[in-house]
Amino acid sequence: MLDRNSLLRGIIRWTARVLSVFSTSVLIMFVVGEPFPVEKITATQLLGLILFPVGLVIGFAVAWWREGLGGSITIGSLLAFYAVFTLLMHEPLSDGVWFLVFALPAFLFLLSALLRRSRRMVTT
Image 1 (cartoon, rainbow, N blue to C red):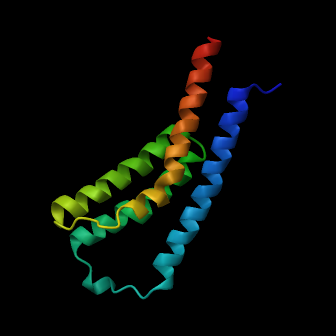
Image 2: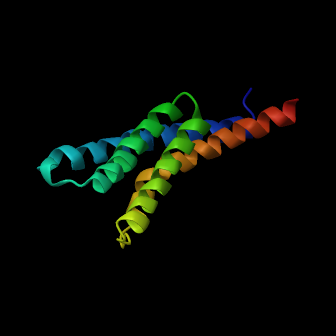
């Protein structure tokens, strides 16, 4: 029989998974939907692109098997992306909150991992 913690964790885990697929799909539409001038991209911009869409998606994929690790990869990529734009490019991200919205599943994956860990500590 499921206890409340297991039920809550399952809901959070599957919400994170569904939202990660949705977030990844929207990011792919942004990347594929517009012409992309590869020849005009600087090294710093390329680093930012690797961190934001690519780092997020890799973190989401890892989180399907290892929630804590995948969530950490995504959050780490997001923080590094913010650092690249604010420190290296000297461009504050005025609409930076939208990047957090895309990364929301990572926070849910981390919460699910914490609930799993707390469940283990209670049972041992």
